[in-house]
Length: 418
Image (cartoon, rainbow, N blue to C red; front, side, top):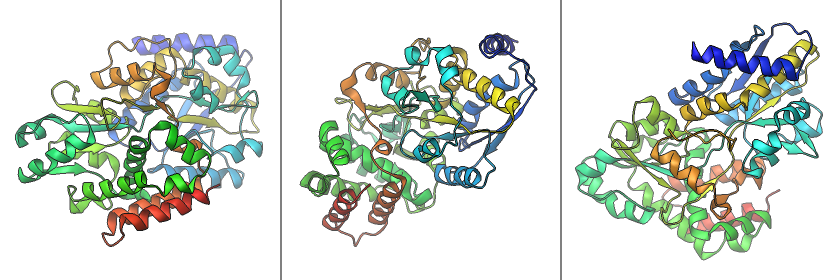
């Protein structure tokens, strides 16, 4: 079988890099890849590890919702029972694990694999390369800056496919008149989907440079300015085009509304593309995509998912951890995982010519540094992130909160952020 041959070859390479006797190991990996498309993607990692030639076994611990999974990991680590590995996002979420000496140093694996040469853009590697040591493995490049829409819905409503958010707002009344949901969104997990939409709108309204200045200097002046009031005003306008069932809906069920032609458009990261792929949809005739919220100004955020490995007392487990780390970033596994996930590979030396039209847009955009947006998590702590989630979710749910009130609260949170 081709896949077994590939993983056997990778195992041989890993054996050369990390020679020495080691026992087969069961390695628990905690992650929040639970949707249909995500499950298909993470299975590529599990298959590679299970067939690494050492008898190792991926022990899957999937926990729905990122903040719940991360909290579980932190509790396990502090309680002295860390998993073998865990999914995180780049940013400040794991800095205390590094400073506390809880993570396995992967510098020898990275050196052998020449990660500093093959990972692109460099910002991806910088999330894991801290003080000259590699503390995690970047496995993909995800961008929040996408809108996904149903071509049949726009055709049924007799409106053109959108090129920007203004186009969509102009078409939304006709979609509603056609008896369909114009705008699909979900409110689970303390409103993270709404904040993702909000952050995309912030970047479009402020521009990358001003947006970065607001977060890096903690500028309450920018956060309380007229552009931000415009964002909240537009967010309120979008709400009238969603449905009453949004409040507790998760993101992949929201995506399914677009997949099944019940809703017109969803703003969601490129992991939604994995759901379309899992449904057998090509991005040619079934669905369309806007990169950013304005096709004339394409932007991509270049953070994604990383895998952390936790210090263990067993040298056999440590050897298995390093074998898995090497596999995660190997060319064949990178292509298999990211084609299923909807994300871009972190390696710049792999062939993605078979990728669908939406991924081709992102692969082209990421070539230009001017199009790259730093993810918000690089600027703010988890505490600030939760405050923003709560504010944006409250504003979306409570029509009595004015755009002025929301802008003032946003300015306060940013001005007082860590």
